[in-house]
Image 1 (cartoon, rainbow, N blue to C red):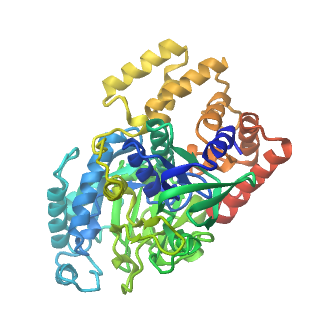
Image 2 (cartoon, helix red, strand yellow):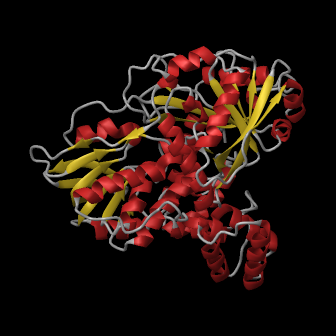
Image 3 (cartoon, rainbow, N blue to C red):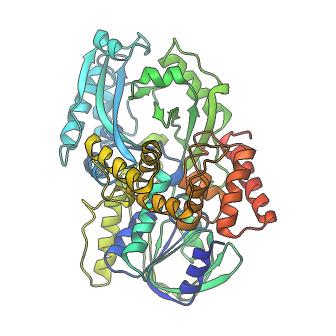
Length: 563
């Protein structure tokens, strides 16, 4: 257990909180930040790490939900496009525009099916013709007008579309280019939301690797990573456990089924030719069976996704062989001149989307909207429980705002801080253009004596939080590169371990950094990183070796990484 978590356990034990949030994924972390900013005394707890569950397994897109147009979820499209535009402003250190190419394989197909779906049919179009795509992109531009930060779409017939994307199959008849966004470090953004909340209110606390073990009347009982048990009291509890929501509610004495999750898997390919051919764009395309797939550049790799399969066990979910076959077959059909094989896969991941329980005929028709049902106090449970059901990465701020308003109203309080235009974490003071960026880098390089290139790397990783990292490096007296991953240094890893509530080696290599998903880990790298982290976190040699073994097993079992 880290010193910070040990200190938190001492501070938390026996306390009474306005709100206790169970689960520190994107929805829980977003709500924690919002409530802390309003002056509410809050505790957020996760049985693993912040952002380690479903929130670590997204398509890494911040998107307006163009596909929700065909399922008639127009309000969700409006909310999603607004929140996408706000995130581009509030988190520019990790959210950036993503031009997207959408090919069409017919002129008119799918139009009548789309109309039927819009008016309540339970079947979506199996193909989306050029007319349907053009109408959809026009509507998408209209919905994205609020706080617009990106251009409107362009639509092209076959010749012009192939000139833009020459590797795409010549079977297309047209194509459009519209704009969404991607997030480079979603796991870090979850942590930054938690950190913003802690900074906003000194009476609030966050604990990872801490499990709910029971309830005694109005007291919740937890056990932390060191086996220490603690009790806290809550005026209100928020169940933000994602796909675990029904299980957590059962532990609180609340029966019922709220979640009907689906599995989404992704793979990352080391394929320089593919990455170059994308020209910085995502291709958002129909597979041969009509399902939607996507491929875009992510940290130098090609990210391919996503499946949508009914599933409900988040503990064992992984990307299966038939899903990989599906991805590779779809890519070969879309890009026939490029070669694809399993040997190019450097990482795979999968998660359970915490969607509402549904009897929809197809997983893709289950609503991606969010809701917050309330279980009022009952029996010997004196507090209400609000469950955060559904939702998606892009809309977390809006969802948090809605639930925060519910809670403030229950407590007879009013909003003190509006989060709509509030920067997140390393987005505060982030240089907004190339000129400002160069000035920022030159200024820090002059002050610290570090090379411009090194300062630029840290700014790219941490946003304006790089100031704290640079300060730590200067205090350490050197910035010695690691032997196994030379663009990281001992001082940088030491800062992450000491400053970001990283209690496990996996927290560092899989969430505070992108080393794992980039396919850059080896046994030698894990040993080197764990040695640095072990000094910061006071691990003995047995604990250090256990941490290396645990990460190795996790990567091999769940991520197709063979060290």
